[in-house]
Length: 231
Image 1 (cartoon, rainbow, N blue to C red):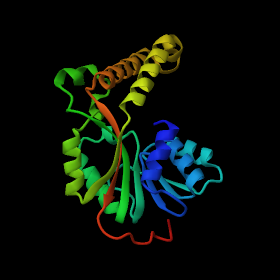
Image 2: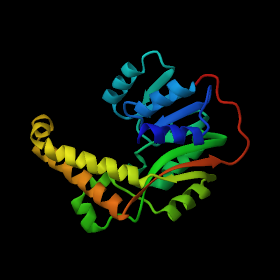
Image 3: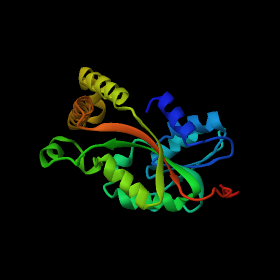
């Protein structure tokens, strides 16, 4: 996501001073660190990659960020005002289990702020074309909103950002192709080819409407309780 898109999503989720935020699949926590620095929230980032979390801790410096290593779901115990999931819902085949776990981690009135690749499930031919297709699970908007509603979460804000993400995917595809020899020297020929192919497909799919990109906020029912003091 672009920085402006992250800021807009954070504002719509009402992230502010003292708000307890759980950032799932945070990686090196670039968006999370920016949100923490600008909002003064209380932040916990979770990822399965130890090396990513090491980098996140180093880059966080004196920011009031905490990090935990875990596979998801299950989610960390606690009761959070906001749960973030940026750029990674695509990798979860079971959206119902994921969203149910998010709802249980939220306070009544809490917000789930996320991005999602919207579209029909990949065909057999598309799965054969897409590298690492076992991590590519788009979901149709009607199905997603139904799953959210079934978990007690109501969509309160939605914004399509397909155009900007198409531009990013296209630019990265051209960059990787132009610099393929150098990249291959670092990560290998096959990995480089997979990188180029994946971004070419995403550029095509976002450009022709096969997949659309959305940022969304869904709110849990009920009154908001105070967040835990030990976050």
